[in-house]
Amino acid sequence: MLDLLVNIDVDDSSRAVKFYTEAFGLRVGRRFGDAGVELLGAPVPLYLLVKAAGTLPFAGAPGARSYQRHWTPVHLDFVVQDIHAALARAQAAGAICEGQVHEHAWGKLALLADPWGNGLCLLQFVGRGYDQLVEGSGVRDEAADGA
Image 1: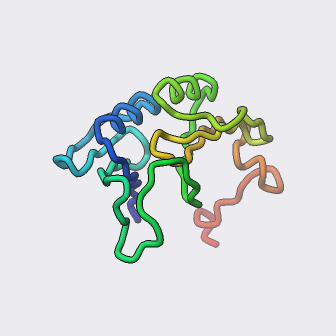
Image 2 (image 1 turned 135 degrees about the vertical axis):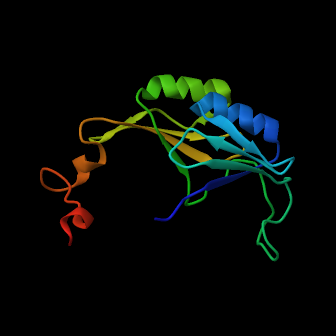
């Protein structure tokens, strides 16, 4: 089985720990000196890696790190039981809500940004959740079926 780790660049470790623990109920695991912090409490560990604004992420990168709001095709979705309570908690911790809560057949969605410009979503599933989008009455697990 493959393990998954989530890494988020931040410019202020203390502020990032405060945000992610208050907004999402994560807890500090290990600390790596001034370089980073491990957060636990989600299905995968989240690592806050301290990187100064203006530094290059790799040699020859087309741009330097910026902690203004930016778009990337990868973002985090936090599944919650009560989207309105979770949204209030995230905003109180410093998240920026980017519109109204959207309702879909599968549940509710709120679009947010963290204080470092990363996109985040809150999801509250209802009924069959994403299975609601699949044709038929349910989802066939091909791995379990031996297919």
